[in-house]
Image (cartoon, rainbow, N blue to C red):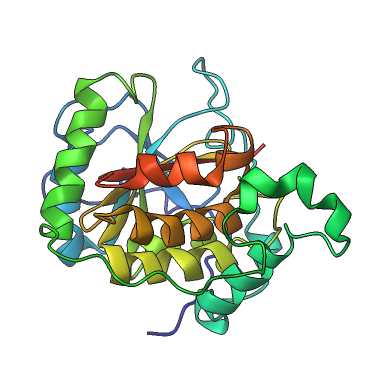
Length: 271
């Protein structure tokens, strides 16, 4: 399917909402920059699941939207900070294996004497990119699992101040690029590259986009790695995709890999 970037536009004056058959927000929406519908009220139990169940018919992928700070207006969703003009390519333009390899190898210094400074972050892959992790096996249905994770995020107050977002896209992986989300801007300007990797994770691990913040992301994962060897390869992909998750979150790539074994949601944060 051809990926076409949405450009900011004004909604029709008659458009009161995204037009879901069953609207969890009761019609109380705003059309942020002509790119994504944002609920005016904070999310409630069952909102994500209700919208997700209608995706095949509506074409609108749901996502929890958190702000840089909990109080309104939520950045970037209510402050006009989406930047579709910065997304200069399509996800389909990129080979995710090449993207991950180049990002990962960028963490390995040319001078061997500098390896001590980054050793824990790239061990045991000092020689460079270890290659794609194999697909996960023995997982559950990705769509059902995504709905379960979304409800757990509500139940455990992980999205207390979030709004529900709805954006028209062929698959959830494309949503960050389509709306011009720039959370990883300090790592990479063109979010289409991240969407290319998300597509691959959808296919290999049953990952689904659940939540976006100013510079954060949460995915459900229906088929995570089940052993340490597999998890190390997945951890290498995560380091490439979002280095701050490891370099500022755990003591080493090895420790991070241990946390990934059986982990049914992945969380990322870009400084």
